[in-house]
Length: 371
Length: 245
Picture 1 (tube, helix red, strand yellow):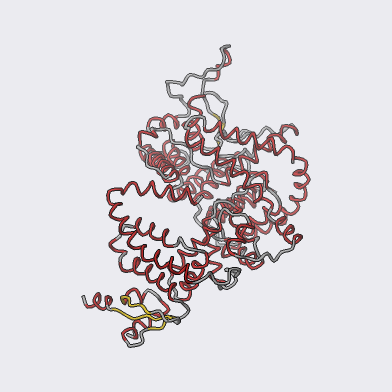
Picture 2: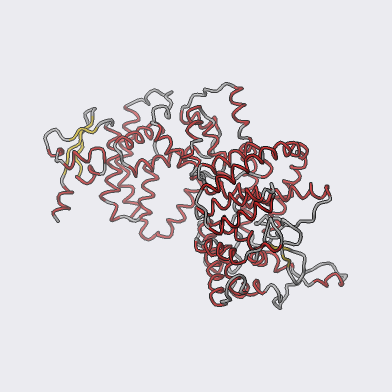
């Protein structure tokens, strides 16, 4: 992994290639005396006490700062936990609240098939240590997978109060759909307020959702121009995120308007895997007929029948929110969406892309227009 | 001008094992532990300032770092500094350990954070045994103890296999723009296949889980109430709880 990062940094350096040559000499000059000294040192003094435990002589707060940096930059749960399993002192220090509070989202990325009581306890522990990501992830799991609506929402609220954009957006969707309650429990204004807070923090899906709400006058006074501004901003942020993630500098025309989807948040991935695994079980039990959001990166499932709305053209797909609908349209559905009377044709399905923009999902049409 | 010329004055630093270094005042002042002595003008005296807890090679390394970051930093691109930092810490674990301790005792925050991050990076992506060998950590656990504590964290072990599978799938996703969701569906279909085998075990776990979760959810609700809650979230949370019961 370090090799890949070094390679990426070299590519980045290519952008300053003109001054790089001068700077390279500078860096070499800076480093040369060290190399000489280092070589001398290696031959002169033998490595002292080759068996010394390096962590043993470090004071506690130094070890804690190392572990905090580890947990905040970990890219999988095993990065953090493996260290905690090496010895007793690291076990004790590695699971301190100070370290757990800094755990990144990826360090808490538990897979659905590995879900267990101990995983639940670990997430709760991180959440109690004021880790916002843990509160958000555990809230999502409890709300959608374990169907504990009250505690799930409370956990998400806790993360939202710490200004976690994902949690704010998730709560907004719950408000828009009235999830966990009856149809009349929808609170559009609260949803828009939460969405606005998430959008202010730069959350791409929230920006999109807010843009659509403004364009449709849904929960907020209709303002098409401002809605469009938000949609454009969402696209710009998404593109910027993808560019920084892949760490290369392609020309914009390479991407065109088909930006690949961002990597899903561990919480959404868990939900999607859980639903996929649960679909088998539900079919056996003669399930309740609750559908999933058709956007694969979302993973949400309905909490009551007909909670999600469907594409009005083909009726084959459902979405939890307009943001998911817009994204899924851009990625996949644009090619597959055909009007409902398709079954009348007995030809094999060869979905021709609809030249006319479909009427009801005006959002995707607007989105198409600006890419 | 007077301020900058004062900073450019040289001070003498000595180590316990006989090393002596002449550096500019600003560099010496960056070492917070001796900055009081530097301010008091001890460095101009005959004997210089005795820097505790470091040996000559370690202090030399630290002074080079401070020279670049304090004196030359204004005239360098950030990316040059980053590359310097990366190359600078390409040393043996032993030397790194000495630098870390010295930075800690001399209270040089930037170097301390840098070395901590480097050590953290060295720990990532390794198995437990590899970490032990890298840092000479003795294995204090017996086989049973080890088995017991690894059982507390079962979700990390399949993780490594899945990540390898996942990385190759995601690479394809990034390269091809079309059919991204198809790739994702394929992956979940694979996992579905492996999950069905463990289905009956999970169902058993499920009943135990629900009892424990009932207790934990009560905890969660009460801690939520303790904190200051904004109106919207409280209203919403209360509504949810009412409807879930």
